[in-house]
Image (tube, rainbow, N blue to C red; front, side, top):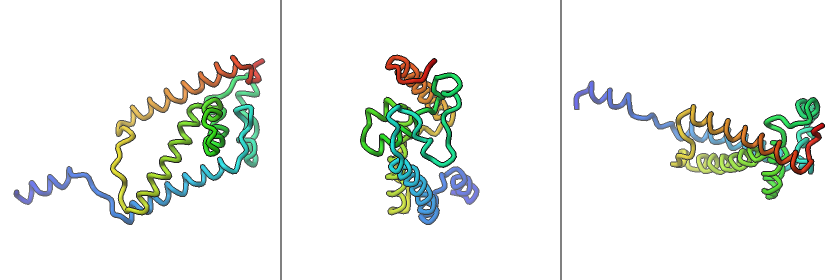
Length: 163
């Protein structure tokens, strides 16, 4: 192989990050995940299925819920996280299905990051498509579907302050 061909092959080969770089990123992701999960464990889930975030300093009620009587797309996320870390998965799903999925994803990210921190390399898992449009579309469908579920379930069970 000529020197020029070798350089061209190296230019297209994926760059493998150093173990130190992997460990730094893994520590950052692990710390972030643990902070989020720790806050969820510290908060007491609101039995209404929304409003748990108001236990955080300076957080008021959802503006959309107050004005319209209907939840915003993220209503119930904090409550879903709080229920998920307590193992009350059905309550988490009923509070906010997308929040439940995000909470489980956060737990998975903590495990994934912990493994990378110990090993110095990322585990070989391809769980998320690399196409940003697909990721965005999938998250949008999840969020809008969960919002629709939250509204329909709340109206059917009379658990929303709909006027």
